[in-house]
Length: 338
Image (cartoon, rainbow, N blue to C red; front, top):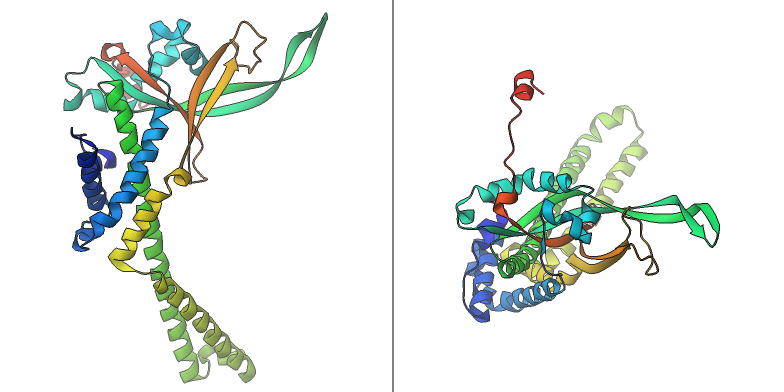
């Protein structure tokens, strides 16, 4: 069970107010149960959670419908042909997904015949030189752009497309909660570093003032030792100013609540989503509308505020559970330790 399942559990029925109330309770539990001790925590948090859920709902509304994602559907689907070079590659992606195998082995999947999920991938574009006709002349130096996809991952498994879209909304909210947890941890670490550095400066200064610069006096003149003491006083003053500024923005549980509220209100800057449209030929070369033997695919590209994370494209998929071929153990490889 992942953080998502622990934090949000199964979506329960009910109207919008019940959904919001449940989400507020679960967010509080996920961030810090001690927030319950703040009398107006739920009232302060509710508008931020509502805004985050509204953004997630608008984001999900822009995602194209599910497509049949099976090896048999590969030849008729421009999306699948663009994503996977061969039907066998699609079959391998389904069968080799550890997340999908875990889901199919869980109690949640026992009555599910058709699996709906998100297929995410990393998009890569390359510029190449290709061959093309310009009038009656065959040119071999035409600049072309190709699009490729790799690092596939399946997630958000659900029995229906409606529940999958609802699950995506929860995933968006979960991501924002994780961002708030990261900010809270960073703030705590910063306060601890400032406090530890202050103690180090005080200890160093006390030793130098009591012993005439200690061992430094063996290698430095008296004026140099006085200069070192003066430098330590300056660093201590700078540290004090930084600590004062840090404490002025608040600390403790109430400050954590404010960080959470800010992260939820900043949903659009934390999680970005844009629709992408490519017209590709059979070689995944980007072409114009004038090329008849090509197809247009539409994807959603997601990005986060973390610059180290690559942008990921995604589409919604649906396939029968029996289209997932069980992995066979290679006993020879196991015996040889491969």
